[in-house]
Image (cartoon, rainbow, N blue to C red; front, side):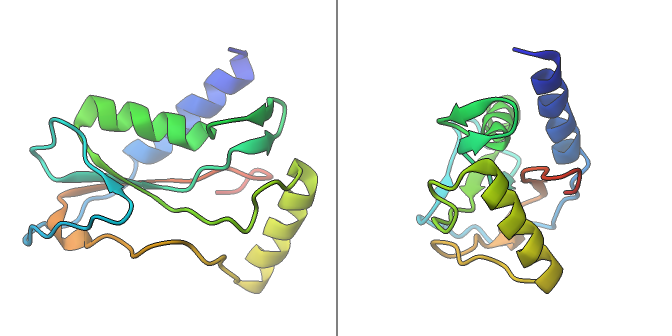
Length: 137
């Protein structure tokens, strides 16, 4: 693992740790894209978007860096997971993807995603993570 990859992973982890929590009251099961960890007793969730495929400096990867960090957080804290999944970018090379993402960000466009968002009222803590593209997050 290169120093740049380690730094990126640690930076993403720091972003997760800086996330704020929500007040949990209702216990409602959302079976769509939430994966529950074995030891979840504190009502935590990791919500993330991770890009697999062609990535900067590491080439084509099967699992995105943010997913790796989300898995670490869930393993350590017992948090549920909700992965934001969109197929809009599947198979895109890195540079065309970055160009498209910049255009979408400038226009305030958000890609469609699968499934329903989780009910955050049932969680005390919400970790949020996503890719860092062209120095922004």
